[in-house]
Length: 453
View 1 (spheres, one colour):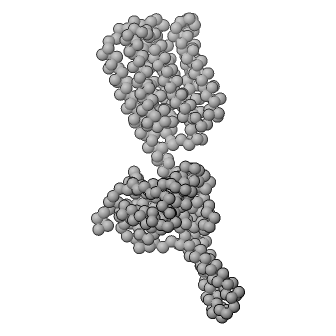
View 2 (cartoon, one colour):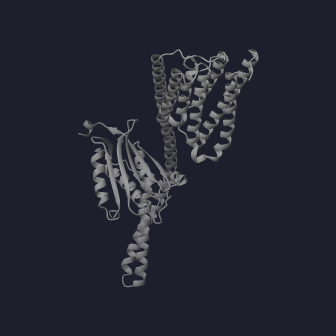
View 3 (cartoon, one colour):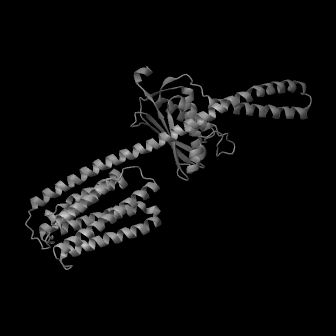
């Protein structure tokens, strides 16, 4: 019985350990959860077949305690797998409750297997480590540490009850084992198990978190490259079109100015001339913005103390009349951080984002600005607001030229910001949820302080 059980449980361990460690969106989470349930179902069938083979080979009856327990355990796992398959589509909002429930039941099943196969002398205590490893796929490092606590507690409780004679574990032959262990032995084994569980939880959780973050950064970089290619193609077309519009527009504006001098005595005609001049100026401003988007100038790059620059901009922003002191700005900035950029373009980028954040807040609200060092050795500037937020489709489209959610907007502000950042080999990511607010994150290349001096 012990050899067959060891083989089938080892298969379960190998299959479970093969689950990849990625960041889990809803689709990925469901897929991995289905994998886990399928593996558990396969394990139950192997356990059922192994128990049946052992029973027939040793001519044992169903009244033998180990056989009855193992049959019951295999049947319970099959039943639970069927229940999970039926319930998962119905509990989309409570997926992590489902996975924590499965993990807890798995640890209880392993505790029962250890009890059936000898308790203190069982060789299957390593199965706790399997649960800790696969849990890191779903609940990552912090959750894995809690699973380690759960496994260590169950194992310790089992050994303490065995030591006190409260329970009598069953040996491989089906007879009860008398308690012949000492308190020191129990303590040693509990410490070893706890150390193993927490070590595996920390390592597997750390690797899972790192891969989750790496995948998130890869997705962000792919989105960034897609935006850059899209904006570059639009920019090439826009540059030629803007030049073609700008030249006749300048001629038209000059001609209207000449006509204005000849119509000063005709009030009706002067009113029409003023309308034409106003709309001509507006169109000229739009064309200039389009040219800025299409081919943003590199500017006069300087080494800028980012903390000082952000503090100065926030001070001016809070005094801006359009804000009307209804928006509070919180700063969390590290000092002595330098980047190379044109100060005017830096102000244009940050000011645009601050205005967008303020306009997304209907009444009173808060904008949180954070400047930190990112693990990719970039300087990360995040601007987070508690405004109305955006849905997924809007987030994908906000950097497209002429896309705007504002009644009077041109839709070029964020496009120009993105193109300016691109000229300095920087990137911008955005996260947003309707009703929760938005977070714009800028990644700048740092330079050393001596260079600034």
